Amino acid sequence: MVDFVTFFLMWAQRMNWEVPPCHWRAVYWLEHRGDLAVLRCFRGFGKSTILGVYNAWRFYRDRQYRILHQSESDSTARKTSRDTQNVLRNHPLTKGMLPDGIGTIDQWWVNGAKDMRNASMFAKGILSNVTGARANECQNDDVEVPGNIQTPEAREKLRYRLSEQTHILIPGGRKLFIGTPHTHDSLYDEMEELGADCLTIPLFRKEYRIEEKSATTTRYTLPFVPEYVFTSIHKGARLLRRDFDYTLTDDGIEFAEAPETVVDCYAGCEWPERFDSKELETRRKDCRTVNEWDSQYQLHSKPVGDVRLDPERIREYTVQPVVRQANGECVMYLGNVRIVGAVAYWDVATGKPKADASAL
Image (cartoon, rainbow, N blue to C red):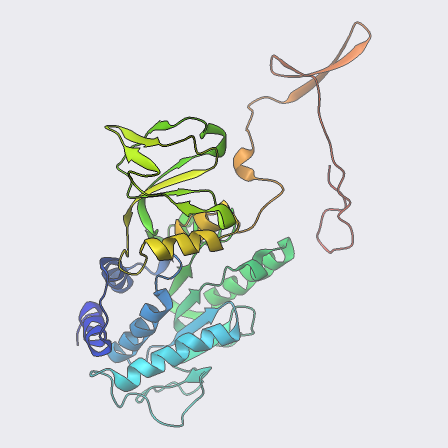
C-alpha cells in the first residue's frame, strides 16, 4: 500500500500534469489531517480534482470505506463522484476495483465492499435528504455558496443539514470541509473555532491594501517588495506596470500620480504558471466588488456582493448611552462624549416564522 503522495504522483504522471507546490501541500495535508478539517483554497485551485484522486486512494487503502460527498447541489456532487470513478478505472493501482453496472453516479460500490445497504460513494447536494445513510467520512465541497446563505432561514437550514452528518458518521468518522468563504460569519470560520485542523492557501502569500481614502499621495511604505500592484476593481481594474505606473523605493512604492482609488499590493503567487499577469487582470476585472476578490482569492470571510451594513465598520464601546435632562433640555452622552445627532430606521420584518417582528 502506498501513501497518498505516491498515489497522486502516479496519477499526475499518467495525466501529464505539472503539479505546483501548493498542490503538494494540499495532498500531504489531506492524508495527515485531523478528523475535523477545513481546506480553504483560492478559486481555480483545482481542489475538487484533487479530492477525486483522494477518494480513489481511500478506496484503494480500504474497500470497506464509505464516503458521503455533499456539494451545493446534486449535479455538482455528481461531478466529484464521476471523477472518482474515472480515477478508479484508470489508475495503475486501482484497475478492476470498480465493477461494471453496479450503482449509479449518485451511489456505487467498489469490488469487495460488504455493506450493500450503504454505498462506497454516496453523492448528494447538501439540501438533499440523506437521512439513514452511514459513512466513515463526510465531505462538504463548496456547500457555502450565495444561494445557501442569503437569508437567515437559508443559513439555518444549511447548518441543520450539516448537523445531520454527525448522526450519519460511524463512531470515529471524519468530516472534511473544502471551499471558499462567501460571508462574514463563514461556516469555515465556525469550524476553525471548534478546533478543526485547517489549511488555508490564498492566491498570494503577502498582501497590503491602500484604501481609497488614503490613496491621495504618490509615495507609500510597504512591509514587502510588491510583485503585483492592482488598482480599482471590476471595469476600472488595472494591473500596473513597474517602472511605468510605479517605481520601487527603498521602503515601498512610488506612483507616477496619486491613485485616488483602492490599491492592492501582492507578492508570492501560489501558482504563477497558471495565473499569469493577463489572467490575473482578467479575473480582477470580472470581480464586481473588492469583497468578491478578497473572499474568492485571498480567502477573507466577506460576502461576495455589496452590503448595506458592513460589520468591519462597527465600532465597539465599553459604555452604554445615557440620557440626561438638564436646564430644560434632554441630552444623550456616550461616556464623556455628547451625542448631538442620530439616525434611526424602522424595519418591519414581519411575515416570516422565527423572524423579528420589527427592528429599530
